[in-house]
Amino acid sequence: MEEDNLVESNDERAGTYEMFTKREALFRIKNIASDEWMYTPDPDYINNKQKDGMKVEWRNRITEWFQRIRQAYNLDTTTIFKAVNYMDRYLSKYSLDPVNFRLLVLGALFIATKVEELAIPTQHLAYHLSQGAFVPEDIQFMEIEILQCLQYRLHPITPIDYASLLIQLLPSTLTLETIKIRTDDLLSNFVFDYSILKFPASMQAVAAITCVLRILAIPQNYVILWLQELESCSFHYEHLSNASVNIQQCAQKFCNHLLLEQAADQEVERMLSNLGVAPEPSTADGGDTFDNFDNGMSTPPPQEQRPYSDHQDPDRDTPPGDVTLITPMLEDEENRAYNKRKW
Image 1: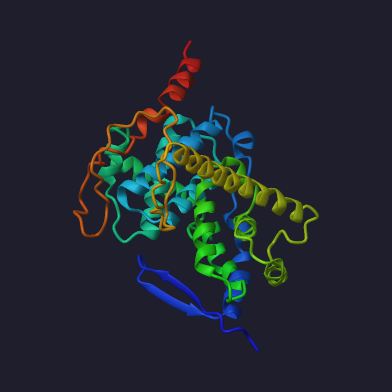
Image 2 (image 1 turned 30 degrees about the vertical axis):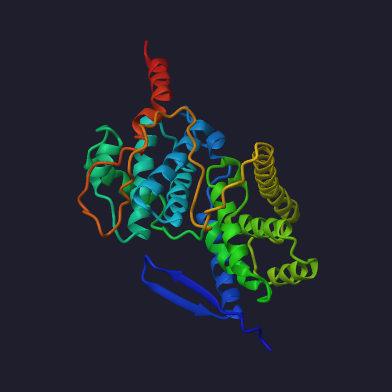
């Protein structure tokens, strides 16, 4: 008899709410897994395709900037995952200099917001985010370029999407919501990591869930049952000789991150205890939170955030004060590239 394990898919932004059984969840996984290869970028496109000076640091800074935008404008985490996917897939085909790279970043972000968000930032906002480097027509042209390059395939299944379905294959006696929160948070922390591209989205989800199950000390028999369920998911890489090795490498990457976080938390508690200060209770709700990296980017003093939503003026065309503008971020790289071209 099929286990009555209902999967809830709640997308408030799209206004949809679905419930389906464990068998239906498995059916959905099989369907999306068959098309996963179409949305997978070159895992080393910086070395294989980029010939105009792009470095890993560029991608790192831009993905961090995406997170600042997400927090300032209250965007969904999936929006950022898709924007990064569009950017990576475009860069897997075309080499860009710093100026066009910045234009690509804005185009990818704006397409992702149109796909995922109800309230869409205006083109004038991009003008201000780029400090006037690009006019709205530039953004529109780049959006068309991106759409054509991606062949209008704008709905990649992100690692978080896979995780939401794969977790439903676990026994319903477990606290699935806790596992989902921990897995989503773990996957979100790795959107910045260029090296994670060597692992397909579904593999990242499998590895992250495996790591979370280990950290939460889930009984081994539950994990084995779940792994047996995965054998029928028909992932496109499951027959490759190095598939299991790659999953183990990805899981180890995630586990090392969680173990470092745990060690850091324990060290903070120990220091506070030595000082006679009680640690503050955690306020984390498992939502879409990310570390606010600096990496030398000039950030204005913190100001009151003005999240972008459909309850606000959709024609607002100035960014909040706590969002780093995109132009200064690659300024040094652009100057160096320009100097190399000079006589």
